[in-house]
Amino acid sequence: MLPSLQIGPLSIPTDAFILLVGLWVGLNVAERRSHRHKVKREVLFNLATITLGTGLVGARFGYVARYHSIFFRNPSDIFSRNLGLMDPNIGIFIGFLSALIYVQQKKLSFLAILDALSPAMSIMAIALGFAHLASGDAYGFPTTLPWGISLWGAIRHPSQIYEIMAASIIFLLTISGKTLISSNCKGSVFFSFLAMTAFARLILDSFRGDSQLLIYGIRSMQVFSWVIFAFSFWVLSKLRVKNVKVL
Image (cartoon, rainbow, N blue to C red; front, top):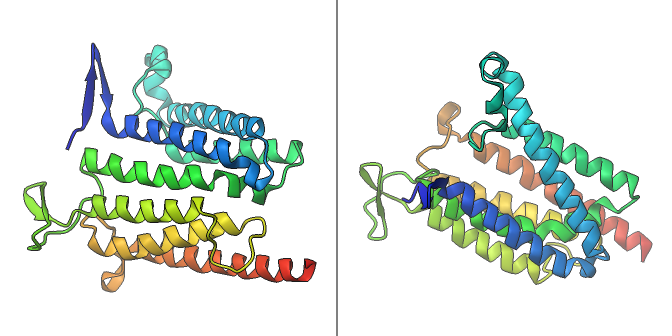
C-alpha cells in the first residue's frame, strides 16, 4: 500500500492522484478517437470540463450543506484542498445534470457522446483498480493460494489486481470497437462496455472481502451488477432492432 505521496510540503492521497492521472489520460485518448463517433474534439473537451467543474463544485457544496454548522464556524474551510470534504453522490448528480443540459442545448447525440467517452471510462476503471491497490481498499478475502498478498493482517486474494486485469481487457475490447451486437450503431460501444464491466464486477465481487452481504450470503453489488448487465443487453437488443429497421 502507498496511501499518500509526499511532494515537497504537500501530502497528496495516492488514490486521488491515480484517479486524476487516469482521468487525464482517458480524456486525451477519448478526444483523439472522438472522430470515430462523429463527435468533435472541442465538444468532448468542453463537455468534460463542464462536467468535472460543476461536479467538483457540487460535491463540495453538497458536503457543506450537509455539515453547514461546521462550515458556519470556519467559512474558509469551504475552499479547503482536502478532497475528503466532498459529497460524491451530489457531485455525480450535478455533473451528470450539467452534461445532459449541455448535450441538449448543443443538440448533440447523447448515444454518440457516450460511445466517444467509453475509452475514457474504461481507462478510469483501470485507474480505479490501481487506486484500490494503493489505498488497500476493495481487498480480497483470505486465501491459501500461492499468489495471495499480505494485506490487513492476512494473506488475501489480490482482488485489486484482478480488477486491473479485467478492466485492461475491457479497455482493449472497447478501443478496438468490438461490441456485443453485430452492428455498430450509436450507443453500442458504450452499452457493450457497460455490460462487460457489470459482468466483470459480478465475477470479481466473489473474491472481495469487503462486500456488503444481503440475506443468504447474496452480495448487494452482485445484485446491482446483474441489473446493469440485464439492462445493457436489453438496450443493445433495442439498438440492434432499430438499426436493422433503418437498414
